[in-house]
Amino acid sequence: MSDTAQRLVLAFVGLLAFTACGESSQTTVPVASSPANASSLEAQRAQVAEDLHAHTAVLASDAFGGRAPGTEGETLTINYLVEQFEAAGMRPGNGDSWFQEVPITSVETSPAMVMSIRGASMSRDLAYGDEVMVSTQQQLSSVSVTNSELVFVGYGIRAPERGWNDYAGVDVRGKTVVVLINDPGYATQNPELFNGNTMTYYGRWTYKYEEAARQGAAAAIIVHQTAPAAYPWEVVSGSWMGPQIGLTAANKNVDLLKAESWIQEEVAQDLFAAAGKDFEALSAAAAKPGFTPVPLGDLTMSVALENSLESTFSHNVIALLPGTRHPDEIIVYSAHWDHLGTRDGAEGEDKIFNGASDNASGTAGLLALANLHRAAGASERSVMFLAVTAEESGLLGSKWYAENPVLPLEYTVANLNMDNLYKNVDGRTRDIAVVGYGNSELEDYLADAAKRQDRVITQEPTPEKGFYYRSDHLNFALNGVPALYLTRAVDSREHGAEWGMARQNTYTSQNYHKPSDEYAESWDLSGSAENVILLFDVAGQLANSRDWPNWRSGNEFKALRDATASVRLP
Image (tube, rainbow, N blue to C red):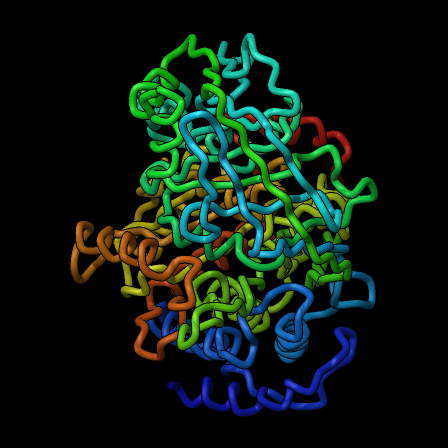
């Protein structure tokens, strides 16, 4: 471990005694030295990599317990961030406060629950964790579904603009819909169907539940398949175990599904067989236009959920470097500080989900960027460093900020988001991958910055995984703000693209949303440092100009941006 990282870890052990979010630490925690005197990109890259190592070692340490919102790990995290932002010369970004309160309610369903499937050809109780994962967004102590008929609705998509309706001709009120993950474009690899290999929002699990609720279903069961889901079953079981956090709802979310669940593909095959249906044949039919829902014989589902509820406030952390000429115009860097926390497991298992890459890395990137801006000095426009909470629970912190921005979003020039910067931690690459490639003019600024590093920008290597809908930039995009989200590219300067892709796949299968996502001082973060410097370069181009980048023609968010043009400052 580097000397800086050792000092940070040792100094921060004393913060375990923190009990209140609003208190400032009396401990002075050293920060990595400024790269102000760096005479080359190589020196700057080395300094930023040192910053990333130092901060990740602290944030992903066991002492922080996996940084779950509403826990002691949150208190440690947000106070650490404030201390580091203060040391970098930043100012509180929410008036005179570093914090923005985010009202959250956790719903923890007892794992003793049983999902029962009954019918003439099947009487089966599904094993929690191994066969089924069930939770609810209804903020009630008890929720139940009894003898609800099972109906297969294909991909569960209603898209009038595409002439597609998987709910056509069926009334699913009070019933349980069984749906496939992803969308027909991915299933067929037909570029003329949806977006072909690139996932649309209709393919996301969040949409499946939203649409089922709009149709009046009592519950929904998503069939897990590793390739179209983009992650193995362990990600589902790990993410859905323990408290599930949502924004506190005045109506207790009673308009949402009573039960949201996943089942293993093998279980689905058994259910379909018991109903006299062929799972593979119906799945293939569901990927074609004109599919109609299929009741699964006389099979019904019952489940009773006993929930522990706790409402509290989590916190976004907001730091600001005010602009010298146009302080009301802001470039926003964002990253989520939270991860999955500490969860009970079998005896001897690691229970701490440290989230080193996801997303201590992006949070460390915010702090490294603060140091870069300290060295560069204030720009004409303001620069915000937004560390948001509860991304892992559904992008909640960024959603709350987008609904309650420090400045109206029409004055936000751009959002530059960092999530899972490290992934394969394999050093430098020749390319840089853009999630949602081709969406906005921000890519032009990024391309200029990439040239200075002798790199090129490319489309992310796995657009079918729907990363565009899985991080906090989405809530800026949904409100018209051009948002740039980079991910790790794969064309390693040392080993080539095939090797890099294999490493990235290894991370997804072995470390993503698992306790094994832990920090290692042996990581080569030079490539991640270059990505941070790229974002610093893009922000610098925007912060000292009068440019207002927009979405490209044909993008679904462009109309929102265009509508705000007349209200922005001249």
